[in-house]
Image 1 (spheres, helix red, strand yellow):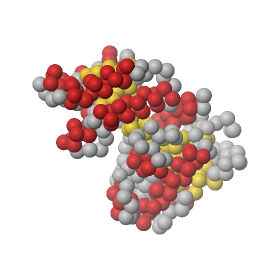
Image 2: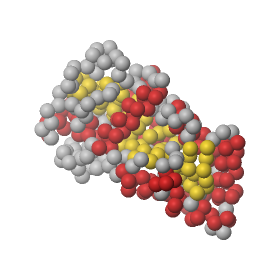
Image 3: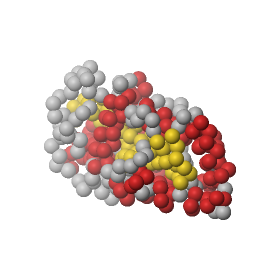
Image 4: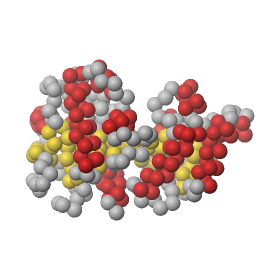
Amino acid sequence: MSHQPVIAITAGEPAGIGPELVLKLAGASAASRRVIVADRELLAERARLLDLPVRLTDYRREAAPAPGALEVLHVPLAVPCRPGVLDAANGRYVLATLDAAIAGCVSGEFAAMVTAPVHKGVINDAGIPFSGHTEYLADQTHTARVVMMLVGGGMRVALATTHLPLRAVPDALTPVLLTEVLQILHADLIGKFGIAAPRILVAGLNPHAGEGGHMGREEIDVIEPVLATLRASGMNLVGPLPADTLFNPDKLTQADAVLAMYHDQGLPVLKHASFGQGVNVTLGLPIIRTSVDHGTALDLAGSGRADPGSLFEALQLAETLAAHGSH
């Protein structure tokens, strides 16, 4: 077992589907040693509720895992939890699971972390300012800028801006931001994905990529100058391209990633092609982090109907990235 990477998997919001998704990893074929970061009794209760014959064992770094058992790094709930019923008292528990996984990744004990969904609202209700996994990971690892990328449907789609109102996007697209995002994307495609010379398609912001300035000047004033400068440094960047024709198979087969200018420019296409199987990857971090592409699905919690497909894909990608990182 010593040659296998150890991957931490946080179970997310305890009232959501995360606990039952991670339970479905039990017995699955493993290219890694998988450690669930969660409350042990929460997992046991959910397994009993769903009649899942899962054997849980405490994670011990130096001990070989018991065959067929699901290893758990126990983080205690603040209060008992019922499926589908949020409780702000457990907001700090959710962050404690993330902290444990982050610490293990930073120390080298874990090769990567995979995150099940959290509920931003209930963490904020606990009096903790929290805008999402990505921002929290950046803050805890002292990373100045991170990039959100989704992988699925044969595509890798990164975002120049993420959770902004549409009217705020043009002002946010500064030369500094775009330069840093492309540098991070390029570096991680090489360092984490093992792509020696990445070819990146860059979308324009406006319809028809601005139509020569007749439909907006962001392409002329911001995007094109940044691409020219980065090409001179050796990056293979194509664009700015009209987003309505960028995502065609001929173009995508000749590219390693796409950079979209805003959230709903790139992600609807990818999610149409891969819904339930997509993976969120945080680029720019000093650690490897992947995540599911869906939310807590409180209405499904405890029903056994939650699809673990995205979690399995996120784990598989984390294993792949960990293998690249070990070379």
